[in-house]
Figure 1 (cartoon, rainbow, N blue to C red):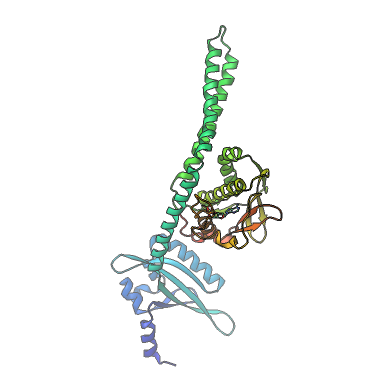
Figure 2 (figure 1 turned 135 degrees about the vertical axis):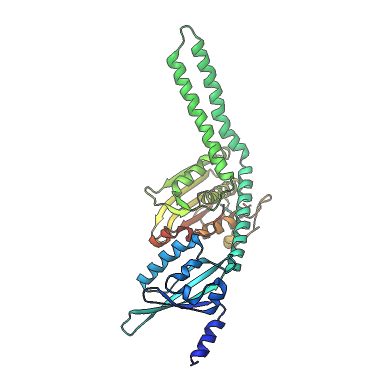
Length: 380
Ligand code: ADP
């Protein structure tokens, strides 16, 4: 057992910050390394003084977490930025462990902070690459749909022209047919809104979305993607069936990214059905609330299916069996779903074709409070 001076050498030699706090969370010791880093003294750090080194954006969250941790009396960790003596901020993983007496009561806390700035920067760089890839894949898949989408917009536009000329004719008649003109004007507005809606959805999907975590209604998100794909489904003679669970709870996530996944799955299904000649093409999109997995969305086709050996390889980057395939759709989709703490997998149907499943857990009470932390770094 080292004696006390040895112990203080040891504590200051540890390549991180070491500290202790009393049962009420008041800091009563912090090592020299912390003082060297922050430029603050031991005395300044005491009690709640250390919180002056926190990044203003992290201070509230950490303090809230710290209070909750003390109530729970369990070990915990939190990522926050600490200010260096020269004003620069670095990310730290702050860990705390309670110490108990014989009766089980917490007598003090020991803590250790590790510098994770390099890891954070690597994560950010990776997120950026991922987000660029997701964007490219989205643009590529939507690019392939240009013909159907143009058709989707063209229909209401043709309606607008027809209705507007009918309207003019009715107004020019003697006597003018005002009621008829009003009705055709109303139809013109309806068609205009329909075209604007398609464009609005397209713009949202094409846009380079920022990191945004929100409550997402999966049914609504899937419905929007399907609406955009109606032309493509029709063009390929696909019969679509939709079975959405009623009252599905929202998941926390990035809406556009989740729509990107759904878009990929449906386009893949259409392509797999194109490959399987001879059968009436049937696509089934379902959502259910699954006690184990959370919100479960499945896209079932009666297409070509896949080799059993390809079951996992399909999710690898650049794996493709298509002549003009890029092989990145499923790998990006899986990384998006995993960023949402969920799972994406494929099964072969009993009959013909394959089903792709994606499950996203429901937010727990604590993850809702720190929703940013749940899918930290999700970029669109
Ligand atoms: P790409 O579509 O460019 O090939 P993906 O990553 O989306 O890239 O898909 C990888 C491969 O997974 C496809 O080439 C295909 O072999 C297989 N695959 C994807 N979806 C299906 C499906 N619904 N049915 C059968 N095979 C599929």
